Amino acid sequence: MNAIALANTAGTIDAVGILNNLVNWAFSFLLIFAVICILYSAFLFLTAAGDTEKISKAKSQLMWSVVAVVVAVTARGIVAVIRSIIEE
Image (cartoon, rainbow, N blue to C red):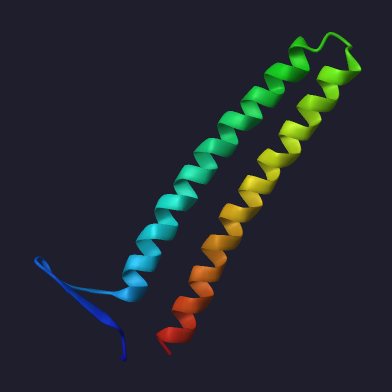
């Protein structure tokens, strides 16, 4: 296996492992953020009381929450593809 290794005080860590840890952290953060945004958009829908401006703001918020989930899942997938290519 040809992995790039970085030396540190605790031993060696391969570059793929570092990338995987960063993506796992970002994935978790984006999913938590997306859930909070989805709950916020639900709150906006519930408190809109028929106001079209508030409803449009809630729809926009929901759309960006879905974008955050898509970005998180895509980042996770890209790392999986890169890892499979490197480890072959």
